Length: 140
Image (cartoon, rainbow, N blue to C red; front, side, top):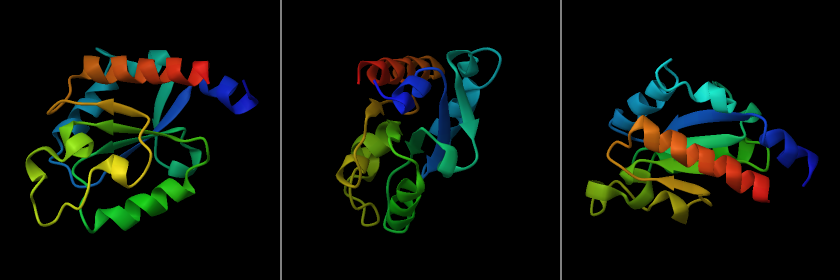
């Protein structure tokens, strides 16, 4: 296990990116930060710059205008950077599957390391998924 992977097991810095969501998943992510769920006890911290991020949380259905922005943001993230699709929209485009504006699911544009389905997923599911990501990092 390299130095970067060892550091990632202690604390993951998370960057949240909405690429066209209805904001339900965004609210649930913010709920994970409240004292009731306290995701920071797992060492995760929400940060404002992708240049310091270890994980990118993506919410919303990927549309034509947000695809180049998403690729640019992913290119700026230090590697290894893990991508987590939160909600049904980035996982499968859900109700926007046949829409003229959505072009593809998130995993067709970039590699996705973890899927957390739900519309919206509960904070418990988000925390459980991110705990699985920590286990995945420790196995590498």
